[in-house]
Image: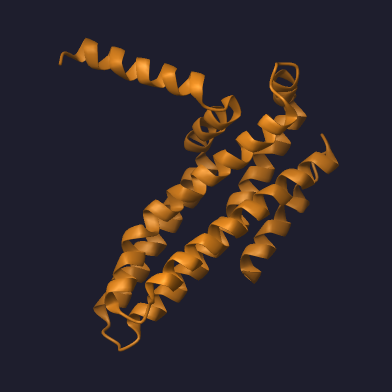
Length: 195
């Protein structure tokens, strides 16, 4: 395949994705991946995951698998239930104050599509964190002390809690409107610490 045909295939794929998926989902996922705040948080989480996994595998203990699993899920809970909804709250507040969501509201898009797109983009960001933590969770399972059912249950619980926290962040922004009450965005971080 030549470089030109590869470029045409890539642009054709992107055009197909843009037409088939929720427009807010596509816009927000692109915004997540361009956001310096999100990328910094993501890379901090990745470094912490790798360091914790390395330390847990180097120091042999009888319960190193369950300890690694507990530390990883606690860290993921903080990032997914606290930090990610905070970033979503911050971004949505900025969008409302700048008026960029008004363009979406005057289009043929329903408010439900707007909210679903926001939640799906947050879920896509959550899955990116799980993709980063996946190898470490597998190592925790292989080290022993972690039941496979418990592993899937915890992942499901973390995703569910993350979505609930994102819905709460969207709800807080919707209630406050264009006023920049950014301190309300700290509430999900408190929920993430509690989780």
